[in-house]
Length: 128
Image (cartoon, rainbow, N blue to C red; front, side):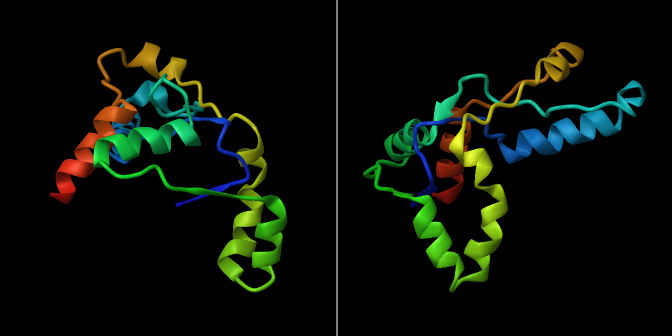
């Protein structure tokens, strides 16, 4: 596994089924139109290091990963278009990237957000 730039910044990651349910909920709520919403994500903010360690624990594998430095990405981008195109995302890997979804959670208090552990466990169980 490769991590861009740093493994010690906090991340907000959303479980895709939660994103789908949240979008459907917003799309079917007339008073939600014309507003900006952050979709709900687990309030437990993890670094990539912590996320990888959690995933490794759940999947019973070693938490093996490499942090790719900025100079490595620039060099790789000279030869690989996908890496070059990823450059526009790099600023968000340098700092904590936290979504605050309080507005969504207040408007839809019954919406259950999948935790990192629950989501990773579900993915693991689907693979079996």
